[in-house]
Image (cartoon, rainbow, N blue to C red; front, side, top):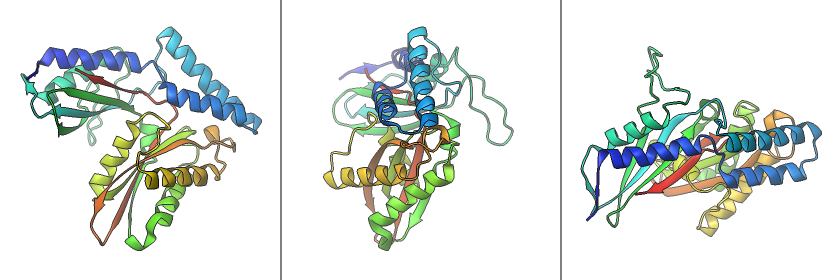
Length: 276
């Protein structure tokens, strides 16, 4: 049985955050570069080139990849045989507090709008898994893209066509606001709240990594093609690539409903995973 203490957890998470806030995920950057190479619109090509240049400068000079360092989203996978020598939520929040010490603090009370001053509390989801390990997955979730996210409560008769149309409607309504090209995390099934969590979990995969379920992977590709057909383009400049990837997670749902949650993520993907 492994034991995990407060500082062990906090130090590991803070180190991950400090590194990744300055590093756009390599898979997302490669997809952006690929989009640039095939872009036919000069204005959108300029935007994509600037995005790639910005990411490279941030990585090489240890600058923050985006001025919005986001609210911290954490999935914690706790082995059923692991021993926690602390309050896990408190340890995770301390990791966020330390990791964001030099970064922009963006977390505030929803009503008073007073800033908490240290980017806590994080949004934390905990799952019990086999073994005695502890794995933390973190993402910086910016507001510009999150504000464009949506939940659609469809009737079952809408089927896959309805899921595709929901994604297209979401991205069309968003326009240039989420700083496209975007990545779509889509959760399908469960309940309204479960679908929303699934849409976040989908974004924890490496960008562009298809679902292991062939039917879901096929639907991901169909949605990606439909969204890119909108020609919103990079930064809304009417280019060929509006979305870099679509990633979906599903869960069984009630026979009378079809919940679909769409989390919009900008091209500045900053996330990582650490196993203690």
